[in-house]
Image (tube, rainbow, N blue to C red; front, side):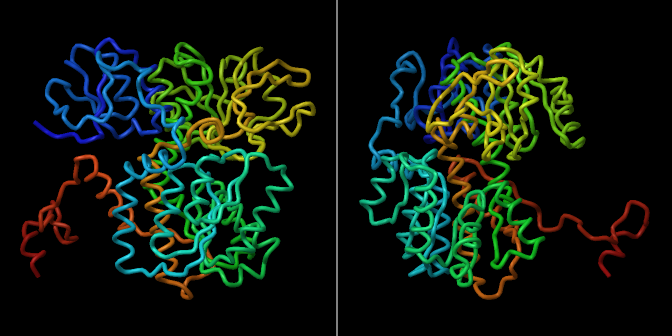
Length: 500
């Protein structure tokens, strides 16, 4: 009998998978993707097994697993309502809970600090401020770095901000800021920290420094960038000759994009929208997903598991073809929108959904952004729309068009009105972030002012740690796999040639 540790989750045969997944994800912010799911006699319960596997879970027979290490139990002895809701915990409790489930970051930092000295390094961080981010900040501070964090009003968890202040970390963060106050606070953190390294989201902080504090960028060791949109911005700066410091594209790590985007954002945007619209909001609905990158892929596969009819719109024929081979319809946006009950933008590109697109949608359709940048939906062209912080839905009156249900004011759903990406997913991303900071320190003064990608060995080390935490491991190769160009299927003396 194998021990599954606290990655195993249990569900009864007559459970409602949609309701269970939404409750588990939203209340605990734990990742369902990559976890084991125990079902009593799964061969008899094909629907739940199929939904769980499409979601990204490994299904096992509950009667054959060890329940002594169960952390979460969703069976006849525990209702969904009894799941501990970490959203109601204190900042300290939420942070300690997150840290308990972030073994990969812990192992990575333990390894990095044996060879890299973080002492006295000044690090300015611009990331969504919630419990997982707090653990990265804690680890860097514990390693000797001087750390400060900025977060705008739409993605700040006040209980975490207050707890970090108590722990001696400089925090510039408030839900009550105006746009002008947020701008001034960002500059204040730059001035106070005088960063050697910036950990950035959307290239926001580094570009602010380049444009308004250029004297600070002259001393930058480098930047570690978290997002797709940020890497795009730095790429444009590089092409324009405006990039004056090295940038590690954390986003380009397979352990970030392939997991954070596809499984983190893809999962939590679904369950956040379930919380807002109802557990079965996707069942039988026509959903148009715009953009079939990792975020769009992760979202589409999960809403299909919950019963949605999904259409993909992507301007790249290769991405569209991939969607078709993954079992989705691929259409032009003008064809898809009038039939859509829900339109979800997953591009990270401004004005993906234009005013004319909104006019083409039918009355009462829902509209949302997953991932997201400012005005990915062209709300700046809707004159009577006023965004608010942390608003689940609003009725959007489109000029000369329908009234739509706008989710999260057109901002990224999971981090503005949800708990952000799951703990175990951010464990991977922040292990890459820590590795990027260490890389900049190890190579300080020798790097070109360009975008840099970490090597495959870094991803492999982090993946091996994540596998171990889940009770798995990668396979091994035999010493001689025959990788020799002289060995062919034609030569009679292949082995003889290879040995020369």
